[in-house]
Length: 106
Image (tube, rainbow, N blue to C red):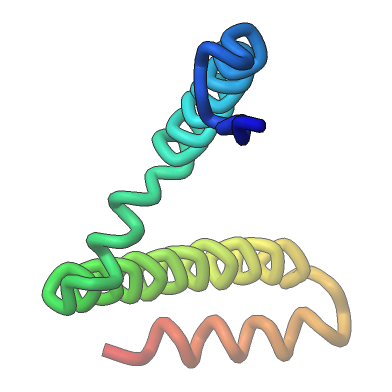
């Protein structure tokens, strides 16, 4: 009795073609997912120390600049809001003294 080879295409031609099509479709899906995730860029970024240092430096500069601008805007709005209360009886004197102190600084 002859033993059957499970990988022989003559024995199961339809099943093998179907399986190959299914695997090719799955490989195409995996390739699309890797392209969308930009895995190559991520891998290059972690394996190249120079790119990683530059990337982290630029991120830190951006955060610092954003924090500075944000602080400037918030303090400016707070100062403008406080200037609206100068005419109040008790709080107005304190705010007026604060404004005079700020304007007297060179």
